Image 1: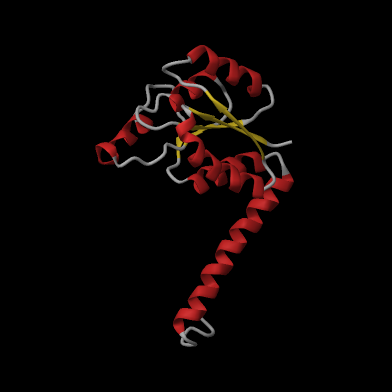
Image 2: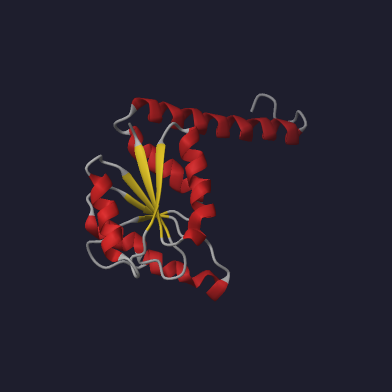
Length: 162
């Protein structure tokens, strides 16, 4: 079974995480949501990582403000880690740098949109799970079909055959 573990820094990250979860569930990927802070509860965070990493999960971290969570999780596991920090108007969005600047040897993927984080996780899972790979392919096909349909509606017949 393909499973993604979303670790949130606090309960305030729940709505952002639910947006990721919705896409993953639609792709047939099981989701576990947990809360642990790299700053406030690092031992708890380690326990969560250890509990799930044997399964070969993908971790997605969701933490606003100073996002140490993504780097912390990535440095503690060999499983893929995607960090998807919620956008904040505070500091004109500059808090994103805490997700981008990582120490050497620490390399979580940074994906800013919840849908994108879910798709990236599903693609990773799809490497070994054919049903998830097929679900991602269908998802992409639906997105492509919508663009083509919208193009036909907007071009008013001028684009037939192109």
